[in-house]
Image (cartoon, rainbow, N blue to C red; front, side):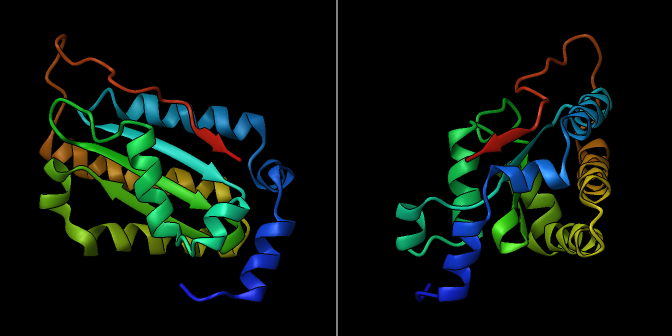
Length: 169
């Protein structure tokens, strides 16, 4: 990705307070609850990560939101679920970008087009300033795919990853 002064300025000016402006602690707790409730209906794992901006070394290396989402997917071990059905929803506020990264078990079924549709729906809500609603809509849409293809199996289903949203930088 080529150097972009406007993008750099957005990243420099978008600090942690930007996350608090669009997602309060209460909203983040509610979103964690939505993840927890959805995971009672399927065996998949959903992680939500929100990042205000990229730090300078990442920015200098031209990291895109997609590339960062892939790194976060790995860092949070979303790929490490028993059925390969973990899904990361990653929001990079400075770029106004949301990415979904899914492990191979569910990605083979839904495909890139399916994930893009969910991202576009979330982005429509974000453009209206409705970040919590957009993220909740995304969690529910991802959950519908997981419920259809990886329904809950009962007592042997365990929560493999934390449900709480992760705030990065």
